[in-house]
Length: 279
Image (cartoon, rainbow, N blue to C red):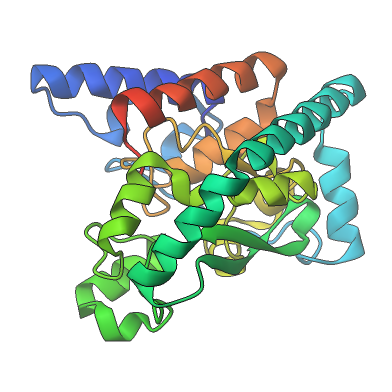
């Protein structure tokens, strides 16, 4: 399995930006800043993974124990990270209370649905929780067969995202471009369900489909985050299909550090307010 650290993911994003400005094509297979435990796993630009269930069943006490054993982070780092998460989220929620209420009214008018959308995700050590977002899609967005073509439906089932998603409203596009749709997730941060920085929160289906047994335990040895190496890195090129997304998320979990978090934090600000690549 290829592991891509958070620093490498961000560096890759910068390289891809420079290449695109020069009109130079690039493929995932040309990314040299990866640590490969099995070089023969790279074939045709994709990561071929052998899923061997070499870990306790997902969600069991034994699985959670393995997650704890794989968490290499120091106690001081984890304590500081949680304190920063709580204080930062508290400030964001306090500042955004009134603007958020006004935005809820606009979203209700735009989508004809509840302004806050919640969906089950998997958290640290495999524990499920409900994540909150400002609604950016039509009210019946869960009825994917109604809106997607067969080709789009196939992509969505694999990646859980589709370019030009027809369910996203006009206001929703603006919310996503500015990442404002994810502001309610700071409530999840206050509750300790997610962190400011970590692997992207994903669904149970994505976990079971794209990660092997030990990879699941490695991924959930740390708390998932609002932002991370994948979001501020090559998010449009690193997919589950080519294996780079798994590599980036597992790389962060394996090498989580204070310096890496700081770099992701400032890179996220650049992505949100300078490059505006949120979708």
